[in-house]
Length: 410
Image (cartoon, rainbow, N blue to C red):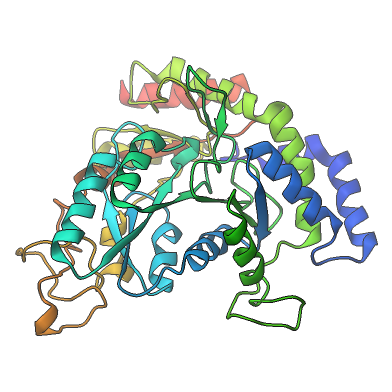
């Protein structure tokens, strides 16, 4: 059994996929060929935004957004404590400070009330300027953008939607038409890593926005900060382009995703929940939301039960993964960065936001080892377990996974 069965997906799509790849290879236009622009137009139309600019990977997509906003030193950017490392890594790479925010137990996404508290604390300390919020659509479910937007507007902050896992997820308010993931941020991004809801055969990413000025800046930044032509460099940029072969792959996969794969993963998730809902905490999809199910993640009682179940599944040849085993504020890379202004506690590191042991700066310290910091995220890292999930799961495979879980827990 595969955790995400890309081999079966290729078997289903093989005829169209081989043709698309060979056409791209035969064209000789391997960088920024016509398939790239075609894909960008298709992605923008699917999401419902004005601009889509593809790039080399999802991490670069986040970086390009921050560069377009001029995020840098002395800026605070608020990031969920329960997410993949790159959501916060890109903030530090721009010289800004990631401030970690707790998440909701049931949806795994950013808690807007804790976001508000974090912003107030940063403002009260007075050393950093709140600038932006990185809202992550974790495991395929869009974050609570209504609540997050209210907080952002209250303090005049920008929202960067990290839709690396969320592409295809949506919100359908009773009074309005469906809004899709990657349209909720002032700038939104996604990843085309192979295991994502829509993945290529390598690395890839995209940035989405309705803002003409930011789109123009991102267009420049992704090609070495170019100006009017290739060798007119007006700013320091990146080399971050999606190659033509990957664009051709994604055109085939996007069509399959829109035609039937998204429906198939939702059907698989419903089946999982119907079989497991009485024995373990299953994912919660709020009313009016639809997930693209990058992961199907259950919550166990504690680490001992989680690890025992994972070992049991492995013994039966059933793959599973822990996303994520460590919250952001406990990552070694952030040990010398301040994640939340506070008074000095027994477990606090006496460093300022740039890691300096400067006695003048000791009022701003990292609680990088304080387990009371972001308690929900910290607890989830001990209890989450993701099960096999993809559009080609069979009823027999789902039954096998669920029976193994039920046998172990009961």
